[in-house]
Amino acid sequence: MVNEIRPRHDKYVIDEEALKVNKLVLRLPPYHCELNPIELAWSVVKNQVKQNNTSFKLNDVRILLNEGVKKVTSEMWANFVSHTIKEEDKLYDIDIISDRMMNDEDHIMTITGDTSSDFSDE
Image (cartoon, rainbow, N blue to C red; front, side):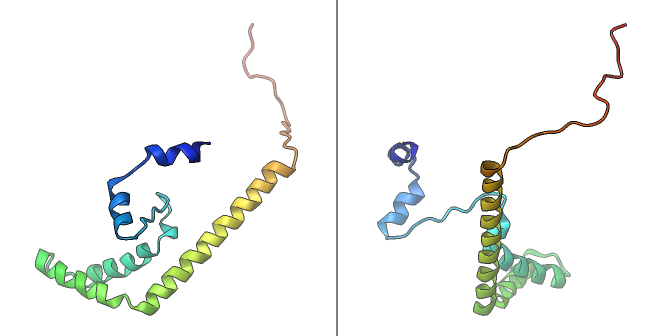
């Protein structure tokens, strides 16, 4: 029911602009950088800057940034995407396993040992 009503209310300008040119905005889950291949590419770029930055001047950093971007090849991108898909599959499998555990088994908590309080009402 919520999915039927939501499209009438949740609209973003960027989505509307993207639709005008037959594009779709992909939203990735927050705090899951392992599901975003650009994070792997970005690490290559940052590493280029980190290893070669000696002056810390903005123009020099800009040059190193551009060099880092050029280092990211199409083969690297393919590997980044492949790695991301593997990570996604792992999370999917874990999700299925945890759903089965929660749905298929009785969950009983057993408390062992001394359950009396160290404090008394005396």
